Amino acid sequence: MDTNFLQEYLADLPLGQVVFFPVLGSTNTEGKQRAEEGAPHLSLVAADEQTAGRGRMDRSWYSPTGAALAFSLVIRPDQNRAISTARLTGLGALAVCDILQSGYGLPAKIKWPNDVLVSGGKLAGVLVEAQWQGDEIHSAVLGIGINVARKSVPSQGELDFPATSVESVFEAPVDRWLLLKQVLGALLTRLPQLDQDRFIDDWQSNLAYRGKTVQILRDGAEPEIGRIQGLNHAGYLRLSSPGGEEKLFQSGDVKLRQVDRT
Ligand code: ATP
Ligand code: BTN
Image (cartoon, rainbow, N blue to C red; front, side):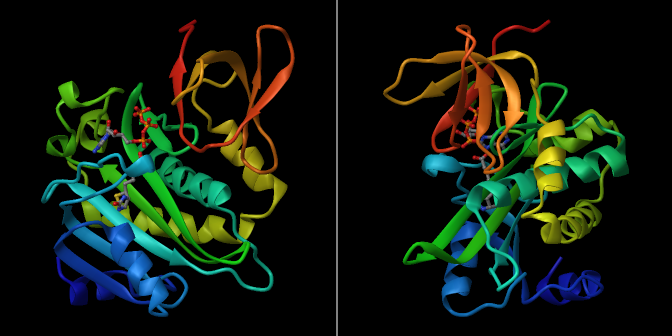
Protein backbone atom coordinates (compact mmCIF):
# COMPACT_ATOMS: atom_id res chain seq x y z
CA MET A 1 0.00 0.00 0.00
CA ASP A 2 1.08 3.58 -0.63
CA THR A 3 -0.58 6.98 -0.80
CA ASN A 4 -1.21 6.87 -4.57
CA PHE A 5 -2.70 3.41 -4.46
CA LEU A 6 -4.90 4.27 -1.47
CA GLN A 7 -6.11 7.48 -3.16
CA GLU A 8 -7.14 5.47 -6.22
CA TYR A 9 -8.64 2.65 -4.16
CA LEU A 10 -10.82 5.11 -2.23
CA ALA A 11 -11.51 7.44 -5.18
CA ASP A 12 -15.26 6.79 -5.18
CA LEU A 13 -15.62 8.04 -1.58
CA PRO A 14 -15.96 11.82 -1.09
CA LEU A 15 -12.84 12.16 1.09
CA GLY A 16 -10.55 15.19 1.53
CA GLN A 17 -6.79 14.57 1.50
CA VAL A 18 -5.78 10.89 1.64
CA VAL A 19 -2.33 10.02 2.98
CA PHE A 20 -0.74 6.73 3.91
CA PHE A 21 2.34 6.10 6.05
CA PRO A 22 4.11 2.73 6.32
CA VAL A 23 5.11 3.73 9.89
CA LEU A 24 3.76 6.61 11.94
CA GLY A 25 3.63 7.54 15.62
CA SER A 26 -0.14 8.01 15.74
CA THR A 27 -2.62 8.73 12.93
CA ASN A 28 -4.59 10.88 15.41
CA THR A 29 -1.54 13.07 16.12
CA GLU A 30 -0.87 13.43 12.38
CA GLY A 31 -4.59 14.11 11.75
CA LYS A 32 -4.68 16.85 14.42
CA GLN A 33 -1.59 18.47 12.94
CA ARG A 34 -3.11 18.41 9.46
CA ALA A 35 -6.43 19.74 10.78
CA GLU A 36 -4.57 22.67 12.35
CA GLU A 37 -2.86 23.29 9.00
CA GLY A 38 -6.27 23.44 7.28
CA ALA A 39 -6.79 19.89 5.96
CA PRO A 40 -10.34 19.73 4.53
CA HIS A 41 -13.32 17.90 6.04
CA LEU A 42 -13.01 14.11 5.67
CA SER A 43 -9.25 14.07 5.19
CA LEU A 44 -7.86 10.62 5.93
CA VAL A 45 -4.57 9.60 7.53
CA ALA A 46 -3.86 5.87 7.50
CA ALA A 47 -0.83 3.91 8.66
CA ASP A 48 0.34 0.35 8.30
CA GLU A 49 2.05 0.49 11.70
CA GLN A 50 1.83 2.91 14.61
CA THR A 51 4.71 3.26 17.05
CA ALA A 52 2.82 5.48 19.51
CA GLY A 53 -0.84 4.56 18.92
CA ARG A 54 -3.03 5.98 21.68
CA GLY A 55 -6.26 5.06 23.39
CA ARG A 56 -8.16 7.14 25.92
CA MET A 57 -6.20 8.81 28.71
CA ASP A 58 -3.01 8.26 26.71
CA ARG A 59 -3.16 4.50 27.18
CA SER A 60 -1.22 2.79 24.45
CA TRP A 61 -2.89 1.14 21.48
CA TYR A 62 -1.00 -1.67 19.79
CA SER A 63 -1.02 -1.67 15.96
CA PRO A 64 1.90 -3.65 14.56
CA THR A 65 3.00 -3.80 10.93
CA GLY A 66 0.94 -5.63 8.31
CA ALA A 67 -1.87 -6.77 10.62
CA ALA A 68 -4.16 -3.99 11.82
CA LEU A 69 -6.06 -0.99 10.52
CA ALA A 70 -5.12 2.36 12.05
CA PHE A 71 -6.67 5.46 10.56
CA SER A 72 -8.06 8.89 11.43
CA LEU A 73 -10.55 11.18 9.72
CA VAL A 74 -10.66 14.96 10.08
CA ILE A 75 -14.25 16.08 10.75
CA ARG A 76 -15.30 19.71 10.52
CA PRO A 77 -18.63 21.15 11.69
CA ASP A 78 -20.74 23.20 9.29
CA GLN A 79 -23.81 25.43 9.68
CA ASN A 80 -26.11 22.39 9.50
CA ARG A 81 -24.09 20.05 11.62
CA ALA A 82 -22.76 20.73 15.11
CA ILE A 83 -20.51 17.94 16.33
CA SER A 84 -19.95 16.40 19.73
CA THR A 85 -17.06 14.15 20.67
CA ALA A 86 -19.44 11.69 22.36
CA ARG A 87 -21.60 11.28 19.25
CA LEU A 88 -18.51 11.03 17.01
CA THR A 89 -17.19 8.24 19.22
CA GLY A 90 -20.52 6.46 18.78
CA LEU A 91 -20.32 7.07 15.04
CA GLY A 92 -16.93 5.36 14.77
CA ALA A 93 -18.01 2.38 16.86
CA LEU A 94 -21.34 2.06 15.05
CA ALA A 95 -19.69 2.16 11.61
CA VAL A 96 -17.37 -0.71 12.59
CA CYS A 97 -20.35 -2.66 14.02
CA ASP A 98 -22.45 -2.03 10.89
CA ILE A 99 -19.81 -3.57 8.64
CA LEU A 100 -18.82 -6.47 10.87
CA GLN A 101 -22.51 -7.39 11.14
CA SER A 102 -23.62 -6.82 7.55
CA GLY A 103 -20.40 -7.67 5.65
CA TYR A 104 -19.00 -10.48 7.82
CA GLY A 105 -22.04 -11.81 9.71
CA LEU A 106 -20.36 -11.15 13.06
CA PRO A 107 -22.33 -10.33 16.25
CA ALA A 108 -20.45 -7.08 16.92
CA LYS A 109 -21.46 -4.93 19.90
CA ILE A 110 -20.29 -1.63 21.37
CA LYS A 111 -18.71 -1.65 24.81
CA TRP A 112 -19.63 1.89 25.70
CA PRO A 113 -18.11 4.31 25.16
CA ASN A 114 -15.50 3.43 22.56
CA ASP A 115 -14.77 -0.25 22.00
CA VAL A 116 -16.16 -2.84 19.62
CA LEU A 117 -16.51 -6.42 20.87
CA VAL A 118 -17.18 -9.72 19.18
CA SER A 119 -17.71 -12.84 21.30
CA GLY A 120 -16.55 -11.00 24.42
CA GLY A 121 -13.22 -9.88 22.91
CA LYS A 122 -12.26 -6.34 21.99
CA LEU A 123 -11.27 -6.01 18.35
CA ALA A 124 -11.58 -2.29 17.70
CA GLY A 125 -11.31 1.00 19.55
CA VAL A 126 -12.22 4.59 18.75
CA LEU A 127 -10.46 7.74 19.91
CA VAL A 128 -11.97 11.15 19.13
CA GLU A 129 -9.94 14.27 19.86
CA ALA A 130 -11.29 17.78 19.31
CA GLN A 131 -9.65 21.12 18.69
CA TRP A 132 -11.69 23.84 20.39
CA GLN A 133 -12.23 27.49 19.52
CA GLY A 134 -13.81 28.98 22.64
CA ASP A 135 -16.63 26.59 23.51
CA GLU A 136 -17.11 25.35 19.95
CA ILE A 137 -15.37 22.49 18.19
CA HIS A 138 -13.24 23.83 15.37
CA SER A 139 -12.33 20.37 14.08
CA ALA A 140 -12.23 16.84 15.40
CA VAL A 141 -10.14 13.82 14.59
CA LEU A 142 -11.93 10.47 14.67
CA GLY A 143 -9.40 7.65 14.97
CA ILE A 144 -10.17 3.96 14.63
CA GLY A 145 -7.96 0.97 15.29
CA ILE A 146 -9.11 -2.49 14.20
CA ASN A 147 -7.33 -5.76 14.93
CA VAL A 148 -7.62 -7.52 11.59
CA ALA A 149 -5.08 -10.37 11.52
CA ARG A 150 -4.40 -12.53 14.57
CA LYS A 151 -0.95 -11.05 15.05
CA SER A 152 -2.44 -7.62 15.71
CA VAL A 153 -3.77 -8.84 19.06
CA PRO A 154 -1.54 -7.84 21.99
CA SER A 155 -0.50 -10.61 24.36
CA GLN A 156 -3.23 -11.07 26.97
CA GLY A 157 -0.76 -10.52 29.82
CA GLU A 158 -0.58 -6.83 28.83
CA LEU A 159 -4.34 -6.39 28.84
CA ASP A 160 -7.03 -5.59 31.33
CA PHE A 161 -9.78 -6.86 29.01
CA PRO A 162 -9.64 -9.77 26.51
CA ALA A 163 -8.79 -8.87 22.91
CA THR A 164 -9.46 -10.59 19.61
CA SER A 165 -9.19 -9.91 15.88
CA VAL A 166 -11.55 -9.93 12.92
CA GLU A 167 -9.81 -12.95 11.37
CA SER A 168 -10.02 -14.94 14.63
CA VAL A 169 -13.78 -14.54 14.84
CA PHE A 170 -14.49 -14.61 11.08
CA GLU A 171 -12.30 -17.69 10.76
CA ALA A 172 -11.10 -16.72 7.27
CA PRO A 173 -8.65 -14.22 5.75
CA VAL A 174 -9.86 -10.62 5.65
CA ASP A 175 -8.66 -7.98 3.15
CA ARG A 176 -7.61 -5.04 5.37
CA TRP A 177 -8.03 -2.42 2.65
CA LEU A 178 -11.47 -3.64 1.66
CA LEU A 179 -12.45 -3.52 5.34
CA LEU A 180 -11.09 0.06 5.53
CA LYS A 181 -13.17 1.07 2.51
CA GLN A 182 -16.29 -0.57 3.94
CA VAL A 183 -15.91 1.11 7.34
CA LEU A 184 -15.29 4.51 5.70
CA GLY A 185 -18.41 3.96 3.57
CA ALA A 186 -20.46 3.21 6.70
CA LEU A 187 -19.05 6.29 8.45
CA LEU A 188 -19.99 8.52 5.53
CA THR A 189 -23.48 7.03 5.41
CA ARG A 190 -24.03 7.59 9.13
CA LEU A 191 -22.41 11.06 9.37
CA PRO A 192 -25.48 13.01 8.15
CA GLN A 193 -27.57 11.20 10.84
CA LEU A 194 -25.25 12.32 13.65
CA ASP A 195 -27.62 14.81 15.27
CA GLN A 196 -30.80 12.77 14.76
CA ASP A 197 -32.64 10.77 17.45
CA ARG A 198 -32.39 7.74 15.19
CA PHE A 199 -28.62 7.82 15.55
CA ILE A 200 -28.89 7.43 19.35
CA ASP A 201 -31.48 4.66 18.87
CA ASP A 202 -29.12 2.72 16.58
CA TRP A 203 -26.14 3.29 18.89
CA GLN A 204 -28.21 2.17 21.87
CA SER A 205 -29.52 -0.96 20.22
CA ASN A 206 -25.96 -2.06 19.50
CA LEU A 207 -24.72 -1.70 23.09
CA ALA A 208 -23.02 -4.68 24.70
CA TYR A 209 -24.49 -5.76 28.08
CA ARG A 210 -27.76 -3.87 27.54
CA GLY A 211 -30.15 -4.85 30.34
CA LYS A 212 -27.25 -6.49 32.20
CA THR A 213 -25.57 -5.48 35.40
CA VAL A 214 -22.21 -3.80 34.97
CA GLN A 215 -19.63 -2.15 37.13
CA ILE A 216 -18.42 1.35 36.37
CA LEU A 217 -14.82 1.89 37.33
CA ARG A 218 -13.34 5.37 37.61
CA ASP A 219 -10.00 6.49 38.96
CA GLY A 220 -10.33 7.83 42.47
CA ALA A 221 -13.99 6.84 42.86
CA GLU A 222 -15.76 3.84 44.37
CA PRO A 223 -16.98 1.35 41.72
CA GLU A 224 -20.69 1.75 40.94
CA ILE A 225 -23.00 -1.07 39.99
CA GLY A 226 -26.13 -0.82 37.90
CA ARG A 227 -28.12 -2.23 35.01
CA ILE A 228 -27.56 -0.70 31.56
CA GLN A 229 -30.77 1.00 30.37
CA GLY A 230 -29.37 2.74 27.30
CA LEU A 231 -28.14 6.19 26.32
CA ASN A 232 -29.50 9.71 26.66
CA HIS A 233 -29.58 12.20 23.77
CA ALA A 234 -25.98 13.27 24.50
CA GLY A 235 -24.66 9.71 24.40
CA TYR A 236 -24.28 9.42 28.19
CA LEU A 237 -24.79 5.95 29.64
CA ARG A 238 -28.07 5.46 31.58
CA LEU A 239 -27.73 3.00 34.43
CA SER A 240 -30.42 1.98 36.93
CA SER A 241 -28.80 1.58 40.32
CA PRO A 242 -29.76 -1.19 42.80
CA GLY A 243 -31.80 1.46 44.71
CA GLY A 244 -33.90 1.98 41.58
CA GLU A 245 -32.81 5.49 40.63
CA GLU A 246 -31.33 6.28 37.22
CA LYS A 247 -27.74 7.54 36.98
CA LEU A 248 -25.99 9.10 34.00
CA PHE A 249 -22.32 8.63 33.16
CA GLN A 250 -20.26 10.73 30.77
CA SER A 251 -17.60 8.82 28.92
CA GLY A 252 -14.55 10.58 30.46
CA ASP A 253 -12.35 7.97 32.05
CA VAL A 254 -14.99 5.35 32.66
CA LYS A 255 -14.28 1.63 32.39
CA LEU A 256 -17.12 -0.82 32.03
CA ARG A 257 -17.11 -4.39 33.28
CA GLN A 258 -19.94 -6.91 33.15
CA VAL A 259 -21.03 -8.29 36.52
CA ASP A 260 -23.81 -10.83 35.84
CA ARG A 261 -23.38 -13.13 32.87
CA THR A 262 -26.93 -14.44 32.72
P1 ATP B 1 -10.55 -1.83 28.68
O1 ATP B 1 -11.98 -1.80 29.10
O2 ATP B 1 -10.24 -2.65 27.50
O3 ATP B 1 -9.59 -2.00 29.82
P2 ATP B 1 -10.59 0.90 28.50
O4 ATP B 1 -11.96 1.21 28.01
O5 ATP B 1 -10.30 1.13 29.91
O6 ATP B 1 -10.24 -0.52 28.03
P3 ATP B 1 -9.41 2.12 26.31
O7 ATP B 1 -8.83 3.45 26.44
O8 ATP B 1 -10.72 1.95 25.63
O9 ATP B 1 -9.44 1.55 27.73
O10 ATP B 1 -8.40 1.16 25.54
C1 ATP B 1 -7.03 1.19 25.77
C2 ATP B 1 -6.61 -0.16 26.31
O11 ATP B 1 -6.83 -1.16 25.32
C3 ATP B 1 -5.13 -0.25 26.62
O12 ATP B 1 -4.87 0.17 27.94
C4 ATP B 1 -4.82 -1.74 26.43
O13 ATP B 1 -5.09 -2.44 27.62
C5 ATP B 1 -5.85 -2.18 25.41
N1 ATP B 1 -5.29 -2.37 24.05
C6 ATP B 1 -4.20 -1.78 23.48
N2 ATP B 1 -4.05 -2.17 22.21
C7 ATP B 1 -5.06 -3.03 21.96
C8 ATP B 1 -5.44 -3.78 20.82
N3 ATP B 1 -4.78 -3.70 19.65
N4 ATP B 1 -6.53 -4.57 20.93
C9 ATP B 1 -7.24 -4.66 22.07
N5 ATP B 1 -6.94 -3.99 23.19
C10 ATP B 1 -5.85 -3.17 23.13
C1 BTN C 1 -9.26 2.83 22.77
O1 BTN C 1 -9.80 1.72 22.78
O2 BTN C 1 -8.89 3.42 23.78
C2 BTN C 1 -9.17 3.58 21.48
C3 BTN C 1 -8.06 3.10 20.60
C4 BTN C 1 -7.99 3.96 19.35
C5 BTN C 1 -6.84 3.55 18.47
C6 BTN C 1 -6.84 4.30 17.17
S1 BTN C 1 -5.69 3.60 16.02
C7 BTN C 1 -5.88 4.98 14.97
C8 BTN C 1 -5.92 6.19 15.87
N1 BTN C 1 -4.58 6.62 16.19
C9 BTN C 1 -4.32 6.53 17.50
O3 BTN C 1 -3.24 6.83 18.05
N2 BTN C 1 -5.40 6.04 18.14
C10 BTN C 1 -6.49 5.77 17.24
